[in-house]
Length: 70
Image (cartoon, rainbow, N blue to C red; front, side):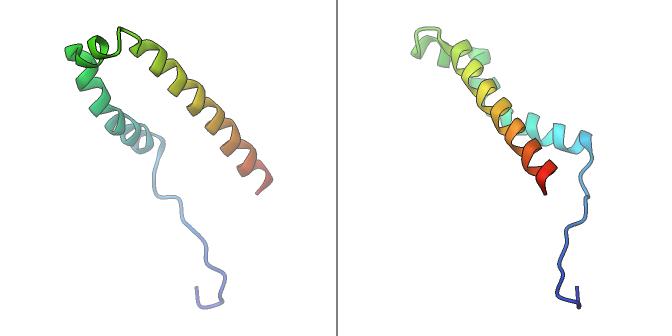
């Protein structure tokens, strides 16, 4: 890095990234397992997961395009 051209190294593998993703989802899984969230939202929890999946899909497409251009 002495030449003023910083760069990042890849240190996380696929399994590490999948593990991080599952770790972030753990909190929502606990509430849904006991049905607290389902009862409070009149059982529309699957719709929330569907909306989150669409948002994650669009984000993944966006990241893919950004990586391809970079």
